[in-house]
Image 1: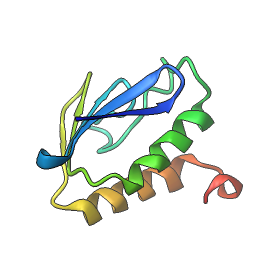
Image 2: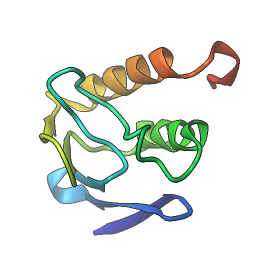
Image 3: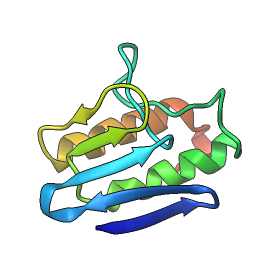
Image 4: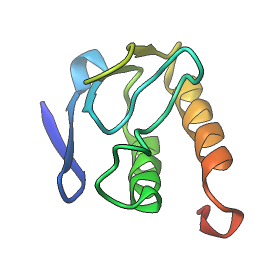
Length: 98
């Protein structure tokens, strides 16, 4: 089990053998969106949280188990990368993308 501190006050637990990321309040899913963040309840800036979501692109998980909402099951790592990149492209201003 690997503990990832994405920004102060936010952690995720990564279990590499099962390719599972326990995200707590960091990342979630709903009927409206496969990937989302809790912008309304965020204690940090949204831009900081989006930068931390970008860090997840390099982690090899295909299951996301959030503290709220439904789990996310990606077919493979490439589908996860595509979904996170699409989410970030929709949320980040063009000058903030890396």
